[in-house]
Image (cartoon, rainbow, N blue to C red; front, top):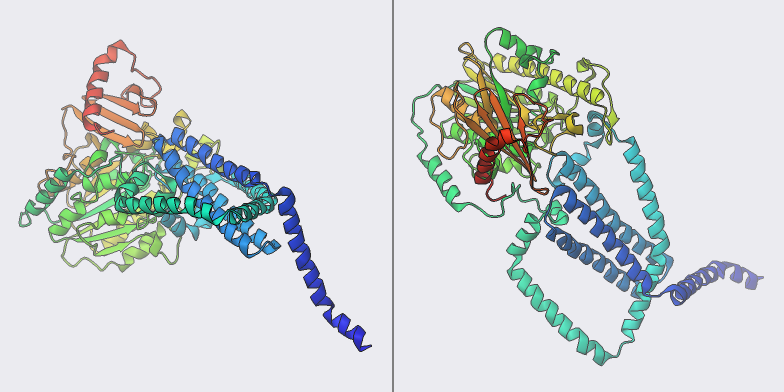
Length: 640
């Protein structure tokens, strides 16, 4: 009896040994039958081909240099080489099912990581013209539900496609992981069987070569990093987004020295109108969708009321220097065209800070993590008050109601002049929009792949209306705190928004008028509005503000104070592979549009063709216009 009880008690142990031996036998058998190195070669070939095809598409679609393909393949090869080495050491430790499963999980993590990076980079480059970065993913990860609710797109079909891709790739990797792992194990066995003398003869030179190469690479690390960065290698730019380059690959030390000298010599004791200066930048706001600019819908009742009272001075034709927020905001603050944008520019907040002003930045969205934008803002001075959407405890990153809370924290005016910069996202596609402002219907989600222009347009107009209502509330708060007793208020935008013309929606993809036309309005609380102005660019906003206060204009600024004039004026614009030069000559406005990757020019007469539907580049009548604008283009964008 005791013998039987002992046998029963030991049964689980014998069963475990049997299962372990069986698993070992199965793994060994599989390695013996299906462990050809061909499985590993096929697996690595598939993964490298997947990355190669994505990068080929990446280069063709976004005009990156072809060198980025092999740069990225080096990174991919290093990742999968590390994975293979991990599989080798894991196979030396165990061939059981858990080891195979662990290898499968690691394989899938590497493959899915690259796949997600390609997908997010496509979305980022298509929508705002910059790489996706780790900090942006991190800061927006917790805000995804609110962001998906805010945007005008229905991502359901894309979501199901992604889930299908996710499940399919899991199934494929599950099927191939076992033979690939066995292939690595077999290859490891064969390597171990290699005679020791041969290992030394081959291994020592390889180790020496790797060591020498490593030392050389370490000495050239700065050059290597710059090479990866400036050629747009996606993994490096995901992890180390230093700054935006705006197409530049070297520092203009001569200009840096001139900027430094201009700042040092700017007069601090000059007499001028010490008004509070309040700058509102409404993200993605188009002038022709605003009631105050004679749009058929009254989307801006507050601004229109100021206009009716004779308090608002408008600029009739304004354009942004680019089609995204980063360069648009910096063009406003630093009065510099794209080729001259730099962190060290002498910006309008620096001028006011040097003159004894307080500086207050109240911003919707994540400016801290948006390609180090805050670093540009605070290069010379720390702000007296700085908060963006990442500080919000009650609202999402892109909810403008956060600004009301921020303004409550600002003390009442005490006699020290202040510079305010408010950034609103209500008109932007990602800005949180409330149902109470859904004035124009039908307005709802539309397909991301094939947007409905009516739904998208109504959605956009509702955002403009909401922004106008928020402006009125912010102005009321400022008035209660006495900041409007003597103030110069400026309303503008960082860029425009394409609403279906030429089949384009959103911004960040081109420089056609929809993406770069913006409003500009001035409101001096102490005097009636001056006569309207006709034409200008973002770079003219800061000089015009200083001129209205009686201050000199820094010599390094590209913009000029706007004033009534009939003189010829040129403005310059760039966004990635797109370039544009606009010339205002009396009532005529001509625009040269250049696409670098196709080396093609387009010429439009915006006075008679504001929708840019008739390309005049081959018209003999406009040959002189083309040659004049092309000469200006080649002068300004000589380093393109």
